[in-house]
Image 1 (cartoon, rainbow, N blue to C red):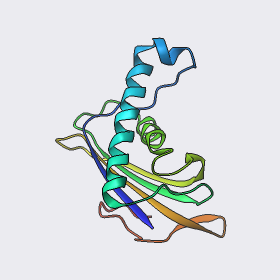
Image 2 (image 1 turned 60 degrees about the horizontal axis):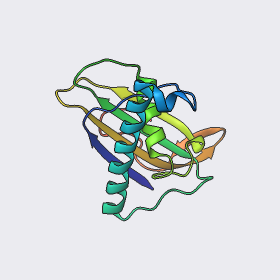
Image 3 (image 1 turned 180 degrees about the horizontal axis):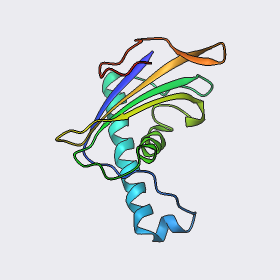
Length: 140
């Protein structure tokens, strides 16, 4: 099973915060607002495709291709922001994500291609069940 999403526009990468700072720190507030916006977009695309949330316990692999108009932050924080937004919408819990393949490619518009695969464990490694190669040339 494969879920494919295309998200457009800028989003705020993950920001470290405490329970208190999420109410007072402007960076934390911006992150949480961005996470909510991404979550709504993911939910809208899930509903349009008739997809249901992937249940807990299913090993997952994700492919993330971020095309920023400007290169301004760490790729790992961008991935964390996207995974946080998808939690509870696309999959129940991001602790079941066993494989992450991420890349950043320069582009004119801000855009994210986000693919989630249900995977199976084989010999201690996660093996993707569909498509050995992404359409962006990332070997899995």
